Image (cartoon, rainbow, N blue to C red; front, side, top):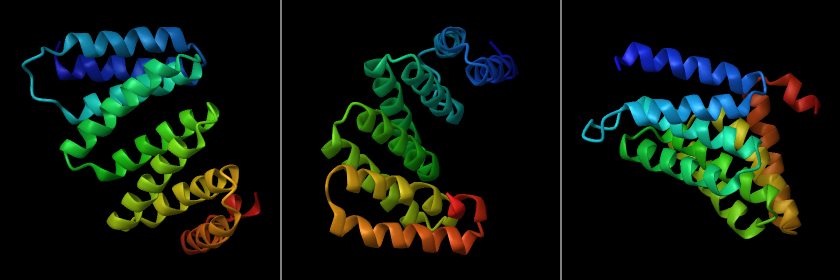
Length: 168
């Protein structure tokens, strides 16, 4: 159970996920988490494994499990001060809730994700998360509030020079 072995399995699980073999990815991510002794301080990569496992569960429609692992990832990321990853995990949670049409909760998580991205001042993250917040606002029928968020998203995309996303 050396770290390099766990990294190998994490990379393999990620590849399985990308190939659409979500059940194998879930099995590998679960094995990785089980291989780490309970008394081990939480390594940073555990948050990534929980996040990836949550996404794999999401892709298989196992939304309760997806939410549980994504929330665990957020807790670890916050504990370790990795706010960039916490913001991304929060938006993943928002996406799961959005798919379940739980708009109030989806909007809450999206707002928190964008607030974190702004607090850490990372332009690429702001540009990535802000459009998703605007979409959730529109879905929640908050049209007047969504317009300035869309404008902010466009401005962020211009600032980072993301012409592909601007064209969408």
